[in-house]
Length: 60
Picture (cartoon, one colour):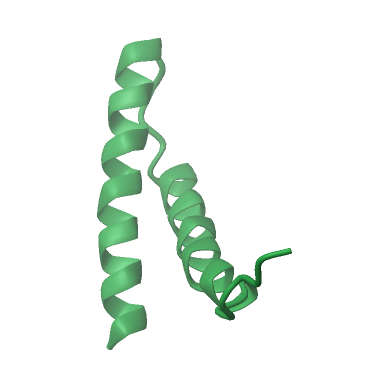
């Protein structure tokens, strides 16, 4: 369920960002581009925390 909600909100926010950015630049809104970016953003959001270490930092 965590993955679904992550994708859901990433999809909505990226589509909104794509719409606003395309309106500001003056080009046509491209739903397919927003969908591809949403999938990429979701993958990035889910992979980055898995890569980052969770261990406490030792003082040198």
